[in-house]
Amino acid sequence: MTKRAKASGIHLQQTDASLIKGMLKRGDRQHDIAAWFGVNGGRVAEIATGARFGWVTAAAATDLPPPGPYPKAAQALAAIAALEIAKSALAKAESTIRQLGK
Picture 1: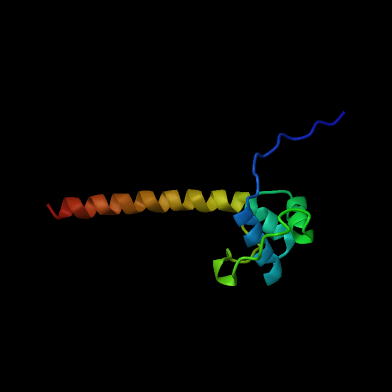
Picture 2: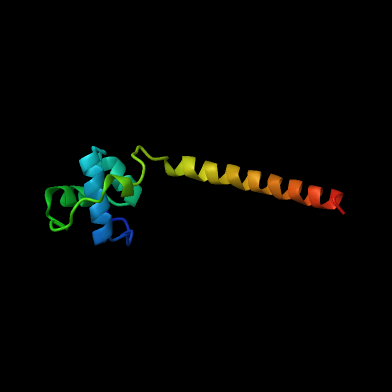
């Protein structure tokens, strides 16, 4: 017997639907759009077909997030770790400069 995974709790809002429609109009892949919003691709398909948020208009191209593909979670975590190391190095450098200035 298979168990379903716990629901993510992510619910798309009207503003999200507007962005999704704009991203679709721009030519973004539904998979990339779903990844941006952290939802199943079926939710994007429902918006694309008008089954959900049919009355919402597409957001302007200037309001859209950058086009995908987007980093994988592992890549994002590696970037965060690298930024933490850089932040620590900058703090140490700042401390050293302040000490030299006294």
